[in-house]
Length: 532
Image (tube, rainbow, N blue to C red):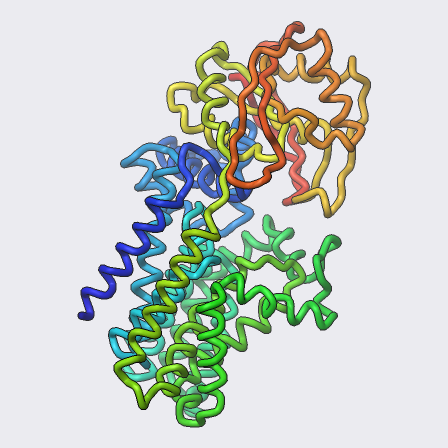
């Protein structure tokens, strides 16, 4: 049974992917195509091996595909994407295949963790409640970092629990390796570090300070994380700002609402059956001293993670999927205790809750998508002259740029973002916008001078900003010709309904064209070449 249950969990994850993971570049969340593009950059970097001047390669790559965020996030998942892209080609489907592997690894790792307290059947049930939870399944079927990081953290915690139970130092070394790898995937898993330290102190007491291996492991981990710390300090200031304070916070961490924000999201994250079962089970465990002591690692994880994420100013429900694993394990453990007089009913109850979670996810929490970007990219790839520059103006620039990168036969094309020409934005509009106000004639000259032959535009995009309104007016003038429109079907009320393709009728400059590109997110102006 120890093999059968992980296989069933893998099949459930496969079912979720086959029935609900968007393909054909139909991204919705704007970060997802950027993560996918970062993997393509790593592939192209290894193919080119520009060791003499890697910075110039990266700058030119950004100039050509200005959705690259390779240094803004930890790089490990992008390295993981490389073999998938090399084998199957650069596509959203290939990236989702990598995400699928991570999701399965998380499911199996979670099952192995649950087995420290639960029978195989109940461990399977608690893992099903977790992996089928709406929030986990929603982000797990997109090209995002939470599930890959969580998978590595789960295996780290599994080996840590093995050390606590078996006192084998090799298991602690393995836990440290997986933890460092998780940090290189998404830095927010750092919340687990104090959990490990507290549990070690609980196990060893003052003797932990005399354990030579602890110092070796800590030293190796710190050395291994130094490059990540340097990258974060140099390029991840927006991430640091999200912790220290942001101007467009949804709720202040200094308020009661800031500390109950994630608690209010839990019912939607887990689905009501899983949430109610987890809360009932949690209360039962807290009222049982023996169970509370046995489940101390999971309870500590839950408390530390909740405090950690609540203390961060930027609030997003997906950040706290890390809470759902301890909740599901503790919840099932508590319900098992409550139903100990009816042992044969426990498995059926837990299975019913898990299946209810799966049903809620399938029917009520589909992964959102916005399609049409693949079709536009195909069209541009078919009509654009060699070495053309194409401008994009719209909310989902990442979807279009990644779709263009998937066209291996048109690697000569470059994309310029209209918002980079007309505005200066630090990460997102809510943090401030500086407009480059120009006349319509000046905008036309700017587009001609940057060699822009075609513009793909979301009609009316950000027309509330004067600079963008004038840009859109230029597209509607006799300087441009509307050649085709494409619908952008979506499974939710999206910002756009169509994309329009315009041909520049002016005297377009020929490349190569050198551009200075301001990237406020990393407080840097880079130089790159387009139309080459």
